[in-house]
Image 1 (spheres, helix red, strand yellow):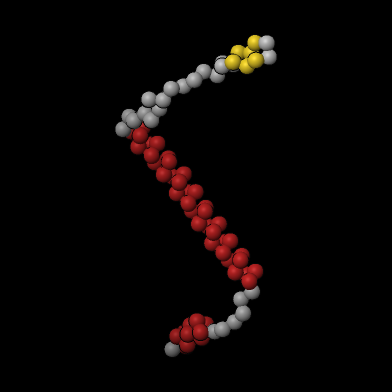
Image 2 (spheres, one colour):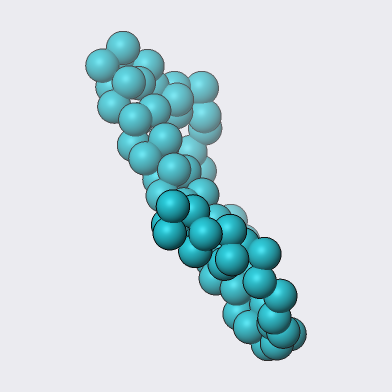
Length: 79
């Protein structure tokens, strides 16, 4: 009985919340959301890479690779 009264009093209490506290709270929630999103993205990429290796899928098979040779003649740069 006492527990219910305490919970109802806490939930119905009215007080002043400073704007700086709300700003801090919003920043903390945003930071957690960004961190969770980054962690999920990293694990998704790792799982995708492992699955591609297991299924022998090469995502670079149709890509062309250019050489890194740079030839300089008379102050003019050519590739």
